[in-house]
Image 1 (cartoon, rainbow, N blue to C red):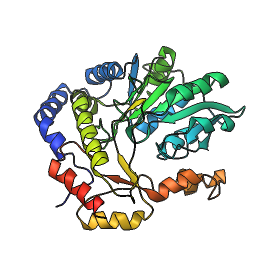
Image 2: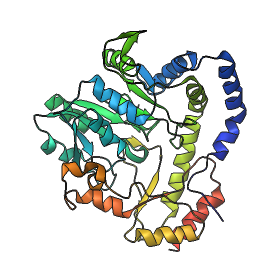
Image 3: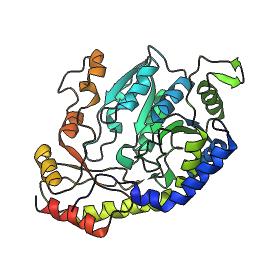
Length: 364
């Protein structure tokens, strides 16, 4: 049996006629930037996230960067970031000229450990970037409490957590602002790059909308040194169709994840957990094992596609050599990078495919 790590085919087949019809509609309007589709998607996604404002942009990295720019975070400032996340989270900080300060995660749930945040705060700290990694919300009450104590902004990196719940509330409205990615592989994915900022802060929303449009609040009137990062009409139209299906797709991911959790029974494999305060959307189903390379080869040899998220922690990447963080300084991030592996979890997986993955893992 061959099971790819990911397949969009079942999902896209179901909505193919809607997608093609919508493309034709947008194409025939001949209006491709800042039109009705973007406006409607922003309204619908804000409502989905139980927030007031949504600003579409070019991608998830831009979304985080725009939030930081909106809060005037700049050179000389520091932003706390989990040591265990995709590099885009840190890059957004670097693009402003500020310094990312890495804080270790809780190894059991992979999100930033709130108990370690406070000792990383300095007089230069301006914000905490809370990543909802793999689709499970970070512990936002504790993070917000620390932020309030030190007058810091809380920025959610929700790129992997569309529709996830924290104590019954959707991610996106749990901090001061949230950045989303709609990269094709996300739970809510465009057919290309796309992103959005979600916030309840009107002043921030207006500022971000201007910064993302060349710093312009109206045509040829530039109040900021802005950039060009706009969600286009075609991707917004596709995302509107997909958004209507997202709850169904997330429900399917949860079903697959819990079949894995219930079925996998191998002492060599550490399974992920869903904490009590969260409703995980399982963007990724990540297991850990000591002999990761051997395990990955075994699964691949048996036709099971896998991926490693992420094999090199940020502080050991060439991009961050300037921070001079030596190996062993962030041991939890390093341990996770050495041991994690992601299993297939995608809408349309058949029971026999899920059971095959479980069987092969249990026989390892």
